[in-house]
Image (cartoon, rainbow over all chains, first blue to last red; front, top):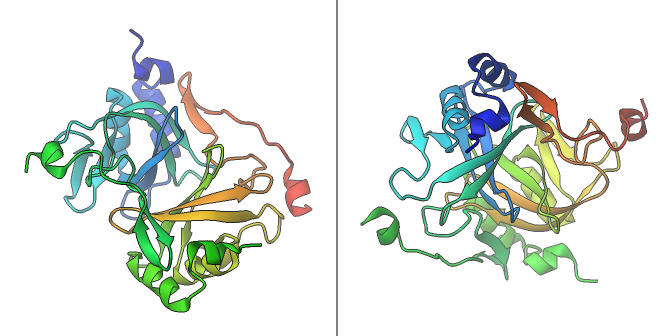
Length: 142
Length: 142
């Protein structure tokens, strides 16, 4: 089986460093990353990565973010099992935003919804336009 | 013709304020906004909005960002003509990211490409995986 790192040719540390060096991390050392389901096009979430998170994501092929609240690497799905397999990674024109094309196992949102973007203005209020597919209990055992 | 503000029911200033109050702007007063072509699902760009930019976007139905480099409102397409008509606006689960479903006229990227996310790791380097559709001269007259 061909690994993702081989496909993207980032198994070579020097090649990986060239990619990492092209990213303009902000003053906190972070870059926003959009996760999009690779086949349906659904935008699942927006989270943040630091250099280590991008490097680990490229190495393992499983998406790893940086949790601003916990102040450490956040291996998506580590607790819930709802992992994101990396299909491709894109950098934008000025290097300060990432787009990860992923294959999302189950749901992306901690509320049990497929996408985190489930709130929209409707009839003068902010409505939930998608329902949870699984419960928090099922995701986190509590 | 039904206006967008009527569809989203944000013509009412109180309703608009409720929506704006639900957004968790960062310490700079900004929130990241993903622009996605509403029908194809293509992720076009990521930019930033302040409260005034969100309010104007909802009022006019044309997407307005906040330019961090210029320090002011950035009415997308004002110079280039490549406007984004707002189709829907989504807020994420923790209120600190926006997803704008838009109808993009022409191209989103200042390089003349449809999407800003045209750089990807290929064969050990960062490759351009999309070509410009229009020239900078055609977009900006220079």
